[in-house]
Length: 64
Image 1 (cartoon, rainbow, N blue to C red):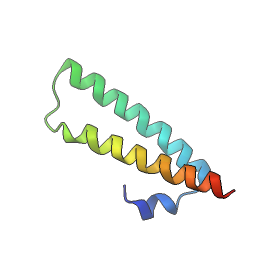
Image 2: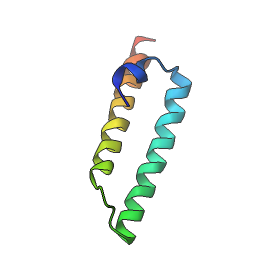
Image 3: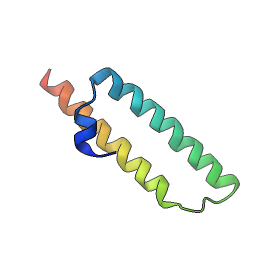
Image 4: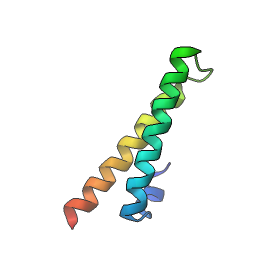
């Protein structure tokens, strides 16, 4: 997810999206332990997206 897409989201939607992405990341990690993923870079991309969303959320909360 691109930064400009995240910035367009409402704070409530952003919080919900972060929780969903965290759950997806945990699922990917568990699936990877059981049977290796074909593309392990998806885990890194998910972590990066979560960090990006959390950073933008923190910026917005600081402004308010």
